[in-house]
Image (tube, rainbow, N blue to C red):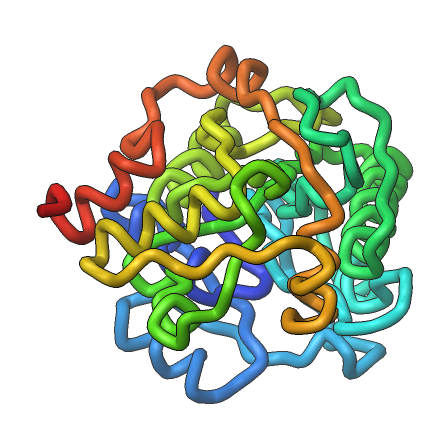
Length: 289
């Protein structure tokens, strides 16, 4: 495998870098803060420090590298100029460019199943920004002639990525019968899949990186509570939710979809370590009492 460059090398990026290093492939992380850069260096990885909002950026040598762009877009607007700044700064030709997007670009499917052939219908600002970034990557890759992949990722969970604070605070959830469907992937599976797709994925393709076992958002919260040994959360109707829940949470409740990972599983050369939520939670908490 070619040398790896990870733009936006946060927690998932560090997992990818560690996994690549364990296989003998060096990784360089690009981060914004000195603290993040120091953490990468302590873990044995090379680091570049820059803020993608500071255009024009200094040149970034990516020639012959496998490049993973994991940095989030801005917090507002409908476009992602940050990735545009990075694409402008790239020097040389990457071997492959993998962009991490969101399954939110599909919008609301009213609880139905969708796959990579489903037309996008981005409604939330965060999804529109990701879709803009996808298009920028595809356009630049086509113009310059390098391979690119898009992975669309739902909610990521792991030991430090669970809603335990909300559960302990007894924040209510929607009644189970009206709760939207959500999808997820364990952080370790995401890191392993990203590396695998650099080898097995086809250029220009989109892959939904999910465990393929959706559940309602209410089931997710209540299952986490059960495994963590916490009391079940109170369930409320939509009218009460509109009064009590944040605008951000309500935006998630207004979209419901089940995402197929059939294309992903046909492509990657490995099984998922955590194919279901219960597999992931048992690894964290053990079996519930």
